[in-house]
Amino acid sequence: MIDEMDLARLMRAEFEAAEPPSAVVDVERAMTAGRRQRWYARSAGAALAVVAVVVGAVTVPGLVAPTDGSPSLGPLDTPAPLEPSAEPLDTSRIPAALETIDPTIQYVRFGWLPSGLAGLSYSAGLSQGDTRVILSGDDGDKQSSAGVSVHLYPKGVTPKAPQVMGIDQRAPVVSTAPAPDVRGEAATFTVYDVDGDTDRLSLRWQYAPDGWATVDVTPWAAGQDLRETALHVAQTLRFSTTERLRMPAQVTGLPQRLRPIYASVDGPLTPDGWRWYAGVTYSAETSTAAHSKAGARTLDVSFSPYLKMTDKIRAELDGKVLYEPPNTTIHGRQASFYAAGDPDWSERLEVLDVRGMVVRMDARRGALDEQGTKGLFSHLDLAGAKPDWRPSLMVD
Image (cartoon, rainbow, N blue to C red; front, side, top):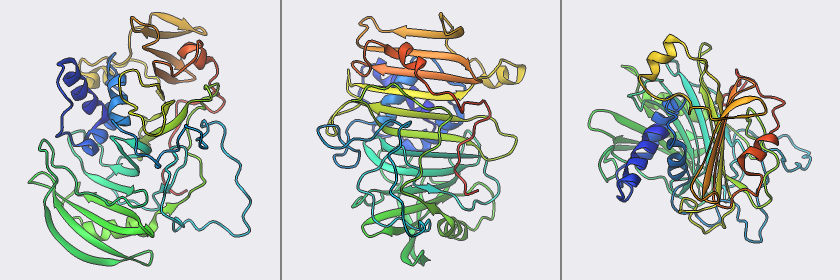
């Protein structure tokens, strides 16, 4: 797995060179790398590139709720009312394979993780042309792809072998063997050779009829029992189809045409960790549109902790830009605002120290009305905002 910012830089370099995007980028590895570094790698063009990477080239019809006359997903601050149930929810399973993935729902949490992991992340929605749910724990090593990840696939989608880093091919299978049943369903162990050095174990089963789930484990310490780890993680997962994904602040005042198509949160697993991130991508395009095409009506809103410069942070930055140079103020706070030559094309707003957070908005042509990103910032619900916010990805 890779960091989103690493992938973004690669994609941006290719775009500026007028070359087609790379076909050999390991997206999972790029996303992991990005999660570990995006608190620091905030160059002026990176966020726009990340949008192209995260949203992908094509929407898969039927997997993200459409806007062309059909019911659409509401904004994160207006959850749909839940019908009362006479029976308690069964958190051990999902009753039916997911036909639509709602980015505002937290479908899965970890019930148990082995020691040695440092960070947690969760994402749901449209990513690189695929719609899926990913929950993962990583070892905190920027150069490593080690850790545990859980994938939930929509109805009828079969898991693929991981991609070999730097090569346009899927990892070869080292071995396949039956696994003990997972939650009463038949399961399989598959070992992949992902880079010639490290093997990745994948435990596969159906969480519901025609709905696949996997737990993938890449070792981060010597002598690990990957099969036992994968089984224990799988058996202790907790599922939901109604729980709202927790965010550090709520986005209100959005035009009715916008709906969320992708959400991502991550944060520390260890008590002394402090870095976190939360972001949502919205789109006004129809369910069959290419959301990353030039001029696509999309909006990114993200939150992260505001960092005051210290010698430690300066050393970790190693020359990277922490924040874009402020060129304006928004409600008395320092901010940077940039708009393309054609104001209708795109604009970007980054506001510093908003209740201890950094708020960033990237809007493309036609996503917002005349209020723009500055007006949308005024509508944010910051009632629960705090710099020590954490995502809730483990069972309490």
